[in-house]
Amino acid sequence: FDSDGSGNISATELVQVFRILRHNLTNVEVEQIFHDHDTNKDGCIDFTEFACLWWDREQQNLESDFEDCLRLAFNCFDVNE
Image (cartoon, rainbow, N blue to C red; front, side, top):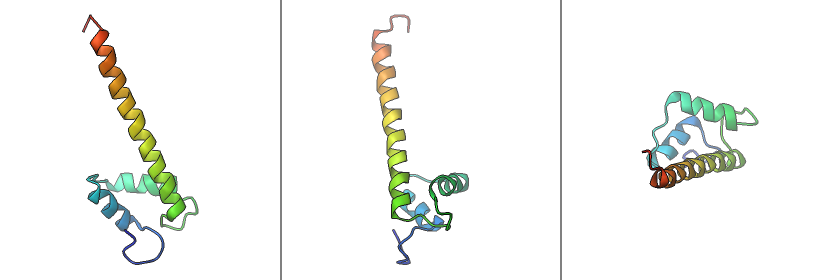
């Protein structure tokens, strides 16, 4: 995904990564990712920053999946629904 071989991922390259993974990021989402994860503020995401970004997104997915499963299980036993 590091198309220019710089050892870092630019905003453009990050968008390409997420498009391949079928996640179309908005400009606001890209800006938020860089704000949250470009810890050295060099305008690129290095490997360590990318690893943290990926970890955070995976944790969000796990929490979301857990909440969905919990809600489904609850609804199975909720006789008022």
